[in-house]
Image (cartoon, rainbow, N blue to C red; front, top):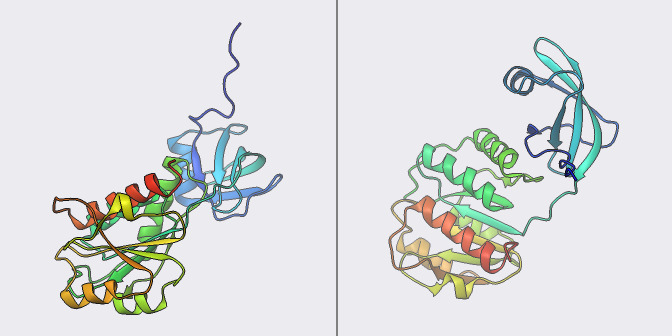
Length: 246
């Protein structure tokens, strides 16, 4: 007996759209997205794509109209419910642009729910372009099958972030001077991982982070890690120990 192929096939193009999705909705695309589906993926009228809007799960849509620089899709049915994302924030000191881009991409793939750039005394990045980082997160979510997008906040000074952070979330401070082994310290529940810049935290910043209520200093092992590597190592460890990898 010939097996029935899975539908929808995993090979279908997948896009994030700003339009709220639901059965019978119409999605109008132009610019880069229309070009991608029409000229790169060569979708014709009646062919299908997968869409998600970050709030309502994933939907199968079929091409209704194709224009020179535009495309209209008709939403047919939901293929996946909206995912539950663990309540994990990465508060990170931005590094050089290429490394920050890579960090955002991989943190999105790992399942982070919020990204908060924090400016420290030794932060080398003078500007953080949030829209650029959001575009990177969208592309990563499209590729890794997420139905949600991480929230990316505007940069904030470390001291101000520590004052306004959610007090109910455990603050795991990745201290290069040492702390409790991460795999033993990380627990389920709302969490914030705080990682530093290329040159590390100053003594004053380290003392401030350690003095916060509900704060735990953690160690990420015996080796010296680059700033972006430390952030991703901490996320992966939390997901494995306390998140949705179990």
